[in-house]
Image 1 (cartoon, one colour):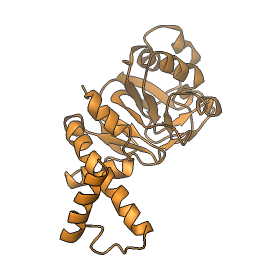
Image 2: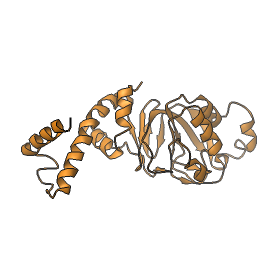
Image 3: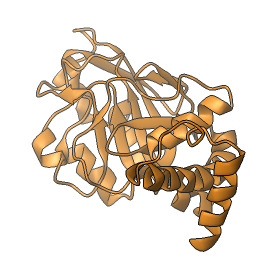
Image 4: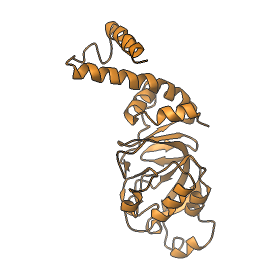
Length: 235
């Protein structure tokens, strides 16, 4: 489980900062490609991944009647996702049909889910954009998921936006997109993010004041000393 301290730090960290920290740790493929927020200017999304995997639909299996029971994986994912988790859906990058809509997203929001991420489409996107729950999608798409997607697995390893996602990995989303932090690295990444975000605020101040980037970003010894003094002055 992610600690409350780490969760609070990640809620204030940009995906740019987090991808840089992960790159320093040797991870290059952590930023979901083509997945954008439905609404910008919202607080960061932070939560453990709860996954749903789709494969291509087949006409004899994917008809409107499959929603009548209680076993359909999409419906089960909506009812089973733990509070504080993010539903991450693998749609193979196909946004020609929706992977969920406003009713299912509302249900997850009421149940305390931390967000929704899909590399497919979302229907009722204009309604979902006004909801309090953060949602990230490849594109708006009106057709039901049954046209293109067959839900098969819940809470297994998936690919979303070209990134491997394992259940329990930490998903962080901001106005730019979504990054996946491997669960075992999340606490260390959060700890480093505090200093990285502070240093970049220091750099921005210097650049706005007219200083050039050489020796500043990345810092030389003189800049490191100036930064230490600046940070002490900031408390």
